[in-house]
Amino acid sequence: MARHKAMGDTPGVILVRMWKRASCWLRKLGTLSLLIPFATLIALASQANSQITSSQITAEPGGEARLQAMERALLEAARQSPDDFGAQQRLGEFYLQQNRLQEGIPYLKKAQLINPHDYNTGYDLSLAYLNSGDIANASTQLHTMIAQHETAELDNLLAEVNEKS
Image 1 (cartoon, helix red, strand yellow):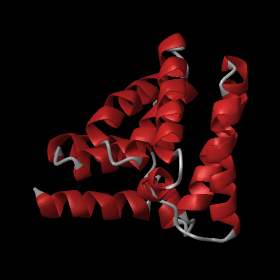
Image 2 (tube, rainbow, N blue to C red; image 1 turned 180 degrees about the horizontal axis):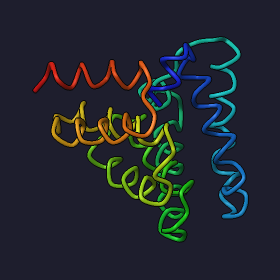
Image 3 (tube, rainbow, N blue to C red; image 1 turned 135 degrees about the vertical axis):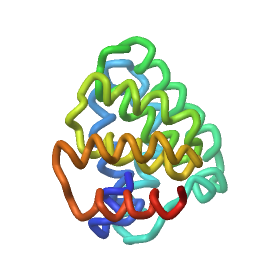
């Protein structure tokens, strides 16, 4: 999530990427048809290079129902495949996009346990910890990541964590 923003992508572009990753397993679950209107909205936002927020989606007719359907599908996928990195990571990302950090953190932690070297998941988990006020876990997560692969992005986030401690 945050890593993409640092690269200059708009939220619409980020959501399109998430949709592309999710559409394959949604087809397998048979829930893809529920999310087609949501995907269309995302694609239009991306083409217009506009920023899309969950409040804009919920303001659309049926938008709240679309978000709820997406959450149900993601939850079902995560429950059916508890050892699937992608299912856990997508649900965690969904909650982060909704600013529901406390709900997203457990799924990101589980995804990280499955694939501890995934940079995006580690970064998003660090950011979720920081934004939820869990400075100690944010610091621990960042130190672990920096030990594996130091980047300016991680150093900057660690500096922000240190400022808040």
